[in-house]
Image (cartoon, rainbow over all chains, first blue to last red; front, side, top):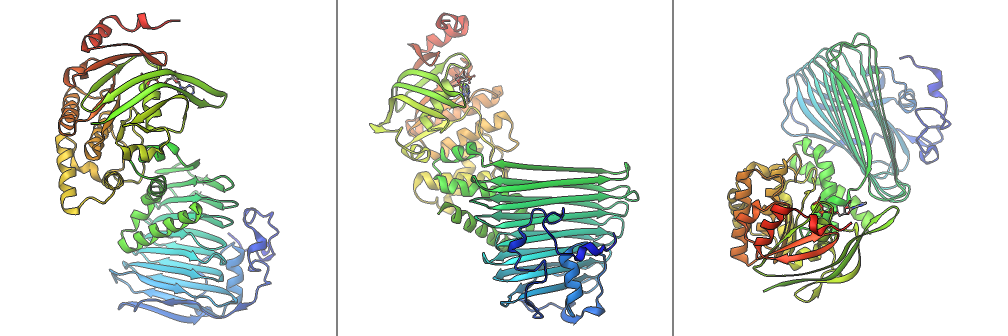
Length: 361
Length: 250
Ligand SMILES: Nc1ncnc2c1ncn2[C@@H]1O[C@H](COP(=O)(O)OP(=O)(O)OP(=O)(O)O)[C@@H](O)[C@H]1O
Ligand SMILES: [Mg+2]
């Protein structure tokens, strides 16, 4: 993919990449009208284990590993002088997650983060986005061969926040990248999780959950580029929507190039509409240039809350509000339980309950 | 001693083109310890009766009354009916993705009993109930009814009944889909619960087979939205032989 100059033009909203996004609510991130500080708001929350470093470095020393066609990413690359670099050394196996926490200032921030997972390393990185903020973010994640990285991005923002991001993973030979994108807070959250593979046996597992209530816009645009043979990808995003003008967008683009024989890919998006007035767009898109693949498929559903489930639970004495909570927790459980981290799972379930409580008020 | 009294119950199903009348004046009284078998042709309204008593929102009560120990059931929400002591073992139990059987049972029992069961005794209580119904304990970790076979679903309905200890239970074709051994196990389960709690039972069925295990005190023939004949267990044998022809009027 080449860098077209049109990437640098201010979007009008008619472009395919922007047609779902409420440009007026981006706090000027898309048209350069926002005041941008050079504050780096992302910091380590816990002490770093041996073999892990977190440092602010010159942007020039960490040039992008890939060409992005995302407007915000390119704008970030042009603007910033410093990047935050998290390195996990070769062969390091971490038992505890590395937690990075954002605390933004009043002015907007453009942020480029580089995560390097060394050969055969094993780690979990959690990024917590809380409070208010206006952030344009690029996270570039490189998994060296045999590396295994779980990357968790939590959007627990206040309702004022604007967060436009690209999370790009370059997954090496026999490396396993797992990402969990959890978006519950924010006014506008637009995250593009993108993946490319550089060696056989590479595997990307992308999970996401989102819950949009009144007036929130939560958008996730996945792009998986199968440009090498024998790589595998799985995508499973689930969202709930409730309240007037709750809006979600899920785009799942998967490209299987001619050389990518032996590709195995499946993507899934399910949306649950809890009330009238909410709208979920779901657009899976699979392009295949070779027939020599293991499998390629996608599914997308958007449905209403199932009253039969509610009736069944209530008929066992369970009050309606608890029954609804059970069903919605159940809807998300399939993904949340994959985290295999009890405190994080409970925290996310609690956030789901919080969102639901807002609906019931 | 409890009494469920159904008087002149009239029910329509709410459909897009308006309401369709299904129940046309059902009268039935069920007391603790009694077993009433309801038999009738497909589509005659048996499940409608069961769902209406449980409070399914699809049905509109257009006349009559249902009381449990003199208290108006039709005024209660679905969960209140269950708390009052009514239980419906459904013909088609609903799958609840992502909700484990153990979580579901605990939540239901907590709601019905008004307090969470004691951790120490609870596990044993569930295990005992499961083993008496020959349900593998591995089901605890599975999602409610998800991927269960027809017979497994029915056993789980009775498992819930055993733990929730209702006063009056409606079993809607609990015997359908059960193999010969499962029918015996489930029937013995129902009889055990009846003995220990003096449960009153409305048993909706198409087959006399289950009535060999669970002896009905009364048999009611249900046709065209109401009870058209009543008798003892000999009536079931007659139906088995002659069918419903004489009750169906064009
Ligand atoms: N949504 C609906 N639209 C139209 N008719 C309906 C609807 N729901 C129920 N009915 C009708 O109501 C009637 C009674 O159904 P019900 O399920 O109570 O019968 P049943 O006696 O339990 O039958 P079975 O023995 O087959 O279980 C049937 O004719 C059925 O088609
Ligand atoms: Mg029926």
